[in-house]
Image 1 (cartoon, rainbow, N blue to C red):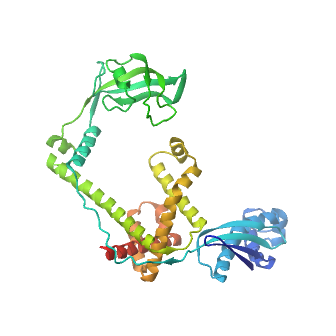
Image 2: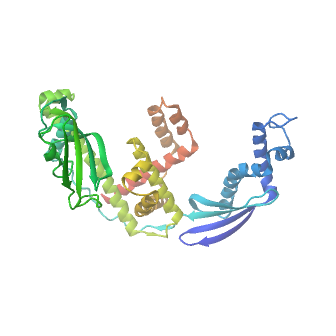
Image 3: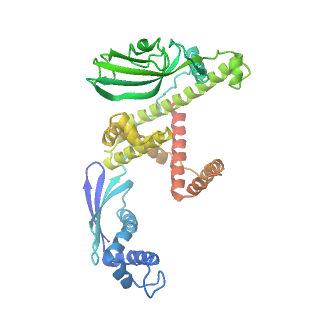
Length: 425
């Protein structure tokens, strides 16, 4: 195996790796045997045909292509060991030459682990903010609970403040329906002011099946700039009108929520709000500490590959959250009027900070010799197995060696953060 090394900017290097024909043989033979099991070769049992026969039937280029990933994975790892390279993330691979009877040549662009020199940070005291639950916060939550338990009944009476209505509407400018300007059975609660100013006033007094046309002007500071200050024609049909009975916040209401009385419900809400605030403050405090350590330390230039990998990870995290809200990525991007490239650019500054934080935590773990014992990993995984005991796919993932490495990183970072926090309080 021949290796040519070229240093690039921002802690990145490029390896041109050439694999000789002799070195390729074991990979090609192994792949050919795998392919022969799937392909019927006259005169031979599956997996027993010689390489030359398999090559003639399947095509040698197909064998090369099928073996390519295995060749690169194995030889790349040997190359960085041989060159004593501390790589981070996955390399960018570009195949330069692949042809039967010739050496295989590929280029690996590799991000190097930037060197970190920690500054003096342990004498800095960073305090948490005091947590206080305001009466208004409890009242707001009570109001939300009451809204979730509203009793709605259809009425044939005229629309008044407090009613919920379902309307069909069309909004057009110059006889062209605007984007998002057509809806069916759109729910509106009269008095909340969710529509543009004047809309609710125009439909108060109408009843089910009534129709009305009117003109309204969009506010000058409307969030959709293309509509701001413009006059539009509205065509509205009232589909249903509902009376809304909002429950009172009393002992009876508390009992419907599973509490003995309203005082105990209020106390539980206060505890929940406080717990949420404490968690958020803890996260803010941790970020503030790490941000301070980053500021006091010297870090070499971050490789673009490392930043790109972090952006990719952040987009996957966002996509996961979006899917759990019942949307898809394409719909989300359309709703915020951005492309995936826009999102990547938006995420870049945060991705840089996340990379810096990860490097700082890694450096502290090395300097303070913070390690995770096998017993701690096993205990964590066993707890996960208990949680996911009914999920076969999840249980299978828990035994994967890559998952174990993932857990080591999580637990190590947690230990490092606890160590940091003990030094700044």
